[in-house]
View 1 (tube, rainbow, N blue to C red):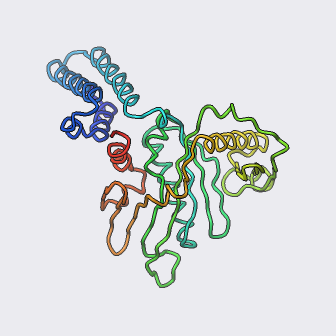
View 2: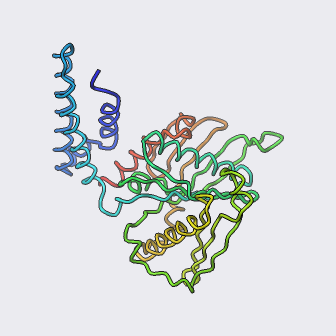
Length: 317
């Protein structure tokens, strides 16, 4: 069958992102409605063509229609996402209150976002995955033109309620993790860094990467004295590459600080998502009102429903 899964998934994703009935009732975003209608019309033509000529070789004709749909969807994304959302994204996850449970919760969220990237065919790089006693932080780069727009709604406090696997009495534990989504601004190269303002240290990386990573000081930590910004990189087993990437990351952060006047700490505290595993199963996003009982599905990277719900309510407005 030439109407394969990729086009069906893409069409369904567009339907989920855009609440077309809502837009029609409000008489808003006429360009979005127009392109959406064209996409759905072409999709009907594809199905009709296949049903009428199933036994004939119509692969060429079907592919022409599919290319038209993909071009229109790209045009739709250009309209949906304002300019400020069109960047690669950094996902920064940090432990909050909760000790070992919070540490473990960061690991679960790190895995969730990596699985989401894989399921959506997005390139990603784990820049840092740092472990320190009962604290853990993770820094992941997602490479996609609209990554920051897709992930913007993930900013916030992620609260987990479950029976603790680290408690001998198996008592219920509440643990917290902080998720920050930062845009990777392409104009970072305009930022000039005076190397006299930097304190550069190296350290032994922990985790995967072979014996060289664990025995040699391949990790790089850079502190920018004027801004008090510190960055770390353990991306590769080579110190020189990690240093270059850390400088790149510092430029991103300095540029973001210049263009973003908002207090990110206050912003993140205004958005909470609860993941309840005990005494019942429920995920509730307090900002959008999104709810689901299928918590296993979500923590295994199937977060598109949550993402699209945020886009539909807060980006398309």
